Image (cartoon, rainbow, N blue to C red; front, top):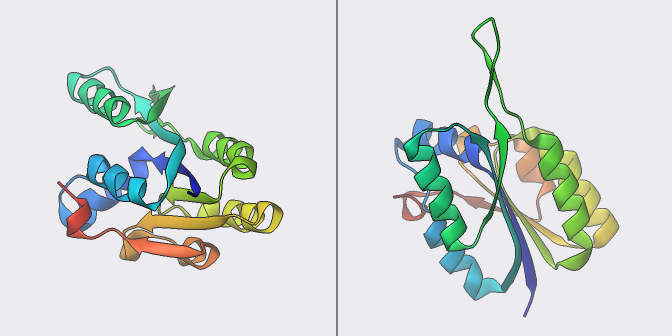
Length: 157
């Protein structure tokens, strides 16, 4: 049975599925589907720690499914903009896990991860898969993955 590692850019998936479908992603359905594909040995969901009840319930639900939820504090800047980027953390975790798995699965549309997927494919000979909303996923990310999976209404709540 192949070993799978899943890495979810929660903010990216939330905003892209909301923009494209005005619906939320169904992480339980994804987990069930991927469980048939192999043994999920790593599953990280990267989110921002906003201390509201809805976020806490959502994060608890992810943990219940089987995800390790990694949180960064929500930083509100003086100019009103916000910061909460997990790109470096996701990259480090993917690089650390890639030698232990057969497949790396990334849920994101962020083209910054293109080089990461190219590197782990080259260095560790792993299959890389990306789940994203096609119109909101960088072409470079789609092209760098071994397989691209379009997020369709079947994967939404």
